[in-house]
Image 1 (cartoon, rainbow, N blue to C red):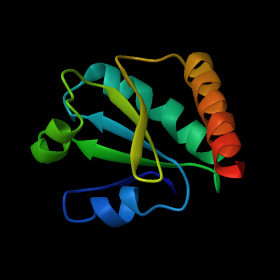
Image 2: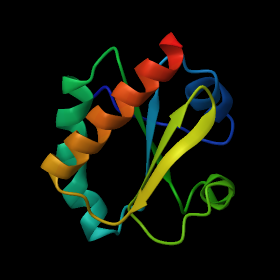
Image 3: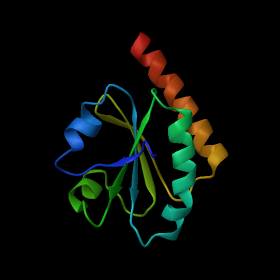
Length: 116
């Protein structure tokens, strides 16, 4: 069972802005090939970072307001949100090693910042 779930305009505040853990938002569309290719990597990372990071998906066609709020110009776009604030965003297909390193670095920076 996947620990990644959909969020929407109606659940965004609870799912993302009020989350006690950092959030990785996957902006995608069902027809997007690179988005589908990225999905298994996100599933793997969701398991690996369980309890320390939550991954949520936003379908840009169903939730254009959220896509606009994050100025999503192309998909896939991944946004990293900590304490309700956007701290990093990347567009395009990301390889598993690059994405893992990026998340590890962001998680370390986040932990350091929260400890200060």
